[in-house]
Image 1 (tube, rainbow, N blue to C red):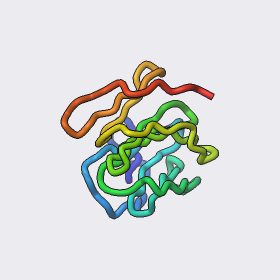
Image 2 (image 1 turned 30 degrees about the horizontal axis):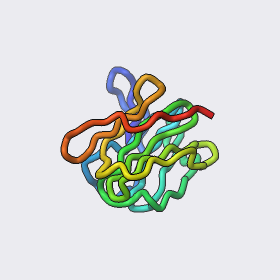
Image 3 (image 1 turned 60 degrees about the vertical axis):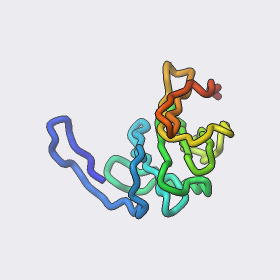
Image 4 (image 1 turned 90 degrees about the vertical axis):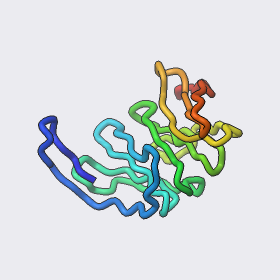
Length: 136
């Protein structure tokens, strides 16, 4: 992984050991933290901007190629998991699962929309507003 300035100059770089390289969005930036998915380790890793591991959040559902991630707010992320047809919101400070959206068949890409909704791309190219999430 690399942290670059706005002119493309490398500030720092570090290794992230996710060995299952597949096509999906596997990185979010939450405040001053870099949050990649580690599919091989069934977890989400929280790094500082200089590459130090702050926390590893175990998540057994993080498996297979299609796991996408996006930032919800300064405290949480969303994971869209193709293999389990599920979308989950996780608080990155506590590791707590805030909510879980089940039966979202073949979920792939995920993004938050207008601070109210979750859009999930499904395998066949359709995109749906699938859930409204609640702030805590």
